[in-house]
Length: 570
Image (cartoon, rainbow, N blue to C red; front, side):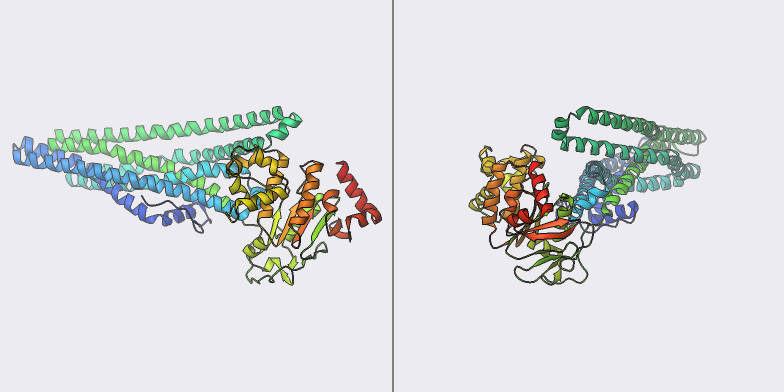
């Protein structure tokens, strides 16, 4: 089987759901063409079964020609074998098309999540993204699964109609006109069904998002006794999903019933007309048997057509949700006129706040409003929605290649994430360091006790979001990961806010020693960290209000003293 997409899936057309579905189809056109060819052979060969049977009856049994009987029986057997083989291959490629369509769509969401970061979750709830991957991508794949069968259904319908026209013009016209009319009748069900399925999809996404938020904040909920509140909200949203599901069920049942009722009515009409023509002598007994076989066979194309309508409706809804996510842009994009950053360490300057970071020094930034220092960290690392005028040397970060900025300036946020995998992979994602280096960085972050508590050591599996660790343990592991980047400029946002004073004191001393000679910026009001800083900057209303050493500012600046003392009390 052709390998599934595993690298960058490309840039999709997200102008509309239909355009996106066409784009996905073009990306797997080869397997779609192969599946369609087998689908046509599969159903057309079945459509010819009644013709071979009619000839065997007319020429062999009624005509008394044993040779013709054997010949037409052999042809019928050949058609059965061809249909069986083509059916196997059609199914194989149909599954491949389904998997490619589904996983390519899921892969696009994965790439978009990595590219856009916080911009995505600000615009679309997390549950909506999860539902798009788990549900909508599968619906999109299902559309490409049925395409081969639908192509075979159309081809076999045309073949049967032509055979009936040749044998009996009225019967042929009934088939040619009747089938499109019956399929057209489905529009009365499909349109309201699509609207209700879209509403159901929206409510389901909200339910998944609520569940994800509840699980993520479970410890906090238990700490404040808020489980019942969230349980009540979840139950209410669950009832909303049930109610819209009931509204969908009625129309879905009508569509499913139409798949049986409409073909059944059509078969009755054709058989009744065929019987009348046989009694009138206009067609032979073999042709009557063949006509009945055709009408029985036409149930397959008709049901395939109704299923196609259903799958296309679901895929269109899924593509609409998916394209909404894919249209979200990243906060930061590559500049059209990239400029290289200066070689080696250089002064980092933020014009908005007036903060200047000297190369090779440990600078601490203090603010009575933590969001101000966090915003500064975002600007220094070229994160966030707003454009940044921060300069490294004489070059604006906004004008430099984004990959180079990310390599040279690393920002470790206040609530960094841990992912599923071994601890070694979490701390050293690029596998650039040996165990001794990892353990040394872990020691700087005072994380030896975290490692000792794990039976597998560095090979121990980390659960999703590191939920088996305490807040302080996660913070120390994240600090270890940041240190192992060996970045030229490392920006740490509240790196010790969740640890005890003794651990914080060890981290402060070891961090200063480990980063000696390299540029390090710490956003914190902790006296233990501030005392290790070469230079401390106080922000007031987002601007530099004072600079100096920790001891000097404590003695001379009342605002600084109040901010730091309040931080100690908190």
